[in-house]
Length: 498
Image (cartoon, rainbow, N blue to C red):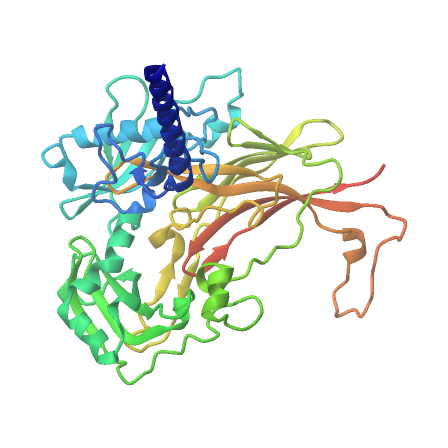
C-alpha cells in the first residue's frame, strides 16, 4: 500500500510540474517577430539572403511559424504568366533574361560586373496589338529590351523570350547620355560621401552629427573637361535631427561630386559654412499644430504624428462596378483599358476604349498614355544650385520611387491593387507591392457645378430638375520622385437615374 501511495504521489507531482511548465511557457513566450529572417526573390534557395544589394528589395518574414502574421501574405507572382500583349515582364521572364545576359559572350567572363539599369517589355507593333483578340489569337512573341553597364560601358540589348535558346541581339546605343539610375545605385550613392575625410571634416566644423545627416544624389551631368567620359553626380545633404521633413533643413553649400561607377568621391565643395541650418521646429505637419512632448510622442507613435483620416471616398450605393480582369485589364462603365506599372513612367494606361451607346461597338480613345517626364530646372547660377535640373522619370524613375499604397489611408476599402515586378542591379526580380490602386468614387453633382468664363459675368448653372451625377474611376499610383508626389487620373462617366 505504501508503494502504491508513493507511486500515485509521484505521478501527481510529475503532472503538476508539467502543467506548471506549460503555463510558464505560455506566459513568457517571446513574440515571434523578435527572431526574424529576411527572404526575397534574391534568395537562391541555398540559404542566401539579399547579398550585397540593398534591403529595399527584400521581404520580411516571421522567424516563428506559429506567430500570427501582421498582414495577409501577398502573392509572390512567381507563377504569373502574361495574358495580354502589353502585360509587363513576369518574374519568370525576368529570371530568364538574367540567365541569358549572364551567359552572353559579352559578359560571360565576369557576369558579376554586369549591372542592369533598365529591363522592359519590347512591346509589339501597334497594329499587332490592336488586331489581337483574347481567346482567338495567341500572344505575339515576347521580347525584352535591357539597358546594362559592363566595365564602364553601356549596352542596349534585345532579348528573345520565346521557346528555344533565346537570342540576345545588340541594339544601337545612343550617342550621348547615360542610363537611368537603378535603385541599388541610388542607395549606394547616399552613403558614398561618408567615406570621404574632407566631407566628414565639413560636418564636424558645422557641428552636425553624421548620424543625423541624409545625403541624396541630386542630378547627373557633365561638370567640365576634367571629368569627360565619366558618369558623375552631385550629392547634397540635409539634417534629419528633429524632423521627418529633412528637405527643410539643408546643409547649404555642401556639395559632393561622386563617380557613379566607382562610388568614389572626387571633390567636396563647401561654400556655405556661414549659412545656418534651419531650425527643426514647424518643418513638418503635425496634427494639432504643435510639436508633442516626449510622452505624447510615445503615446501617438513614431515621429509623434496623430492619425488623420482622409475624407470618405466610398462609391455610390450598390458598390463598385468595375472589374479587374487577368490582372491588368480594367472594365468599368462602358470603358475598357489596360493598366500596368512601369519602372520609368510609373503607370501606363493603354488601349483605352469606350462603348458607343448607340451601336454597342467599342471606340478607341487612347492607345497609350503615361507621364513621359517631369523636368525641373532650378536656374540659380550659384555653385550649389546651378546643376539642379531634376528629370524625375529619366534619372530616378517614377515607378522605382513608388511606395506601397496603404489601404484605408491612400485608397478606400473597395479598391483593387496592382503590384509591380521590377529588376535590381544584379538582374534579379523583386516585387513592389500595392503600387497602383483602382477604385470608384462619387464626385458630386456636376450639373450644379457648371460655370461660365468670368469674362462674361454670367452665372450659369444646370436645370435644377436634372438628376445627373458624376462617378469617377481613379487610378492612384503613389510616386515619391523628388518633385512629384502624387499622380491621379480620372475616367469619368455621366450616370442618370433614367
